[in-house]
View 1 (cartoon, rainbow, N blue to C red):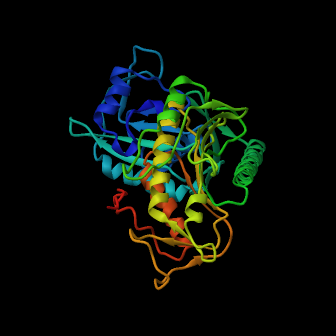
View 2 (cartoon, one colour):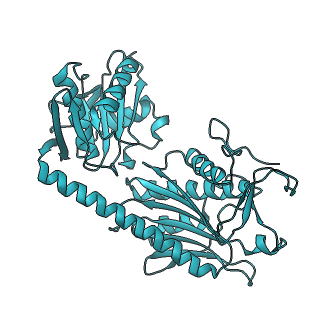
Length: 401
């Protein structure tokens, strides 16, 4: 699904749609559906709209694009041209409100927007996630139904299939929870009771292989780790990828008395960065709480997610993700969000537990800075602050001098 467009969803313009429809002429399939006209606003039309959206969410996710004429002289589902529709902004708002009120349960990460065309009309593009909370039911007036998408068509499913889907999603969630616990425990063993930082991006479906970590392009990306957000801070540190039973690992060795920083990529798409924090601990008086530099963490997480976005785009990995941040063996500790070092005269909140784990869910890594800001907010909340201080309202990193 990620290979349909080269730009992020919020940055899509007419050129991107023309490339899809008139240049590459990508046919409909399980993750792509075209409609020439808007759905009628009567009961039948609303049910049809909700059916198309929930069927994709209950399957693999995908895109529904309204305002595309199909080619009658080509195989079914082949697009011909962008026609657009009238009043696209109003139609997009209508679709948004119907989806919120008539899908049970609501689809997280569903995105809807209109794109203006040169002819003065609009295309509506709906991005539907491979939902981690399926099955989703159409619920309009007295109508109730469940659907899944197979190929280019939707199929109504019965209660037995619904039960099976619920059991499957429960199993996936349990597997994900166990997998994350295993990764945190494994890094605790590596740390040997010393402070460490762990950042992870994990597809919610961890039971299957999704990529080849030994692919030359992927290995080159892991070695070069492009996308450093601040030239004055290291971000994530890497080295030459080495094969491991789970995938690959890059190791950056610094001073020999510290554990090496590690970047690991698993075949199931799990991506993690471990950083030893012993040096920051040894610089401090061990009788006092450990200071945690939040800006440095912001740079590290943003750099990690910049690389993760490129990685998942290369692998065309469509799964929803959990983004995690772990501070291990650091308690008691306090966070300082200022450019200067704090003093104990400052009003600071001390986190007294030994470990801190925060995470967020995301449909994809379209905007690494926005996800970093959300994750940093969770970290700041844990230390008694309302929100992080390192991103502005447009999710731009405010660099420190």
